[in-house]
Image (cartoon, rainbow, N blue to C red):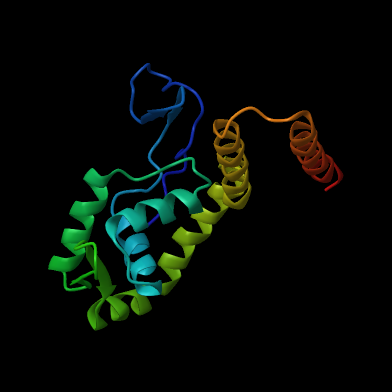
Length: 179
C-alpha cells in the first residue's frame, strides 16, 4: 500500500491530460493509491467513532487543507468497510446520521496491518506539513476574519474602537513576525 510517488504535482500533466483533481488552479495527482483510503478511514474510525463528514474533515485537516476526499468516494468506502464487517453503523442521537464504529474484525485487521497503516499516516503527515499551513493557523485566521466581519456588521466603529481593533491586529502581526 504505497501512496503514488507523484501524488501532488503543481504542474499540468506532461502529456496535456487532466489526470488529477483541479483545485484553486493547481493540478494534482491522486493522494492515495488504490485501496489506501480504506485503511485510513478504518483507523480514524477505530480512534473515534465518526460520521462520514467528520472523516472528510479529518483527512482534509491532516493534509493541511490541500486535499479533501469527496463524499462520492467516502460513502461507498464506508459501505465497503461495513460489508467487510470492519465497521458497524450506529444511529447518532439527535441528528439521525450514521456514526460508524470499528468492529472486532476491523480492529483485528488494523492490528495485522499496523505497519502499512502507520506508513500511510506518516506520509499523510509529511504531505500535510509540506502542502499547507498548520490547521491551527488556518482556524485562527478564519476566526479573526469572522470576528472582524461580525463586528463590522454591528454598525459604524468609533475612532477609539477602530484604534483598539487595529492595535490588536498590529500586536498579533508583531508576535507572528517575532516567532
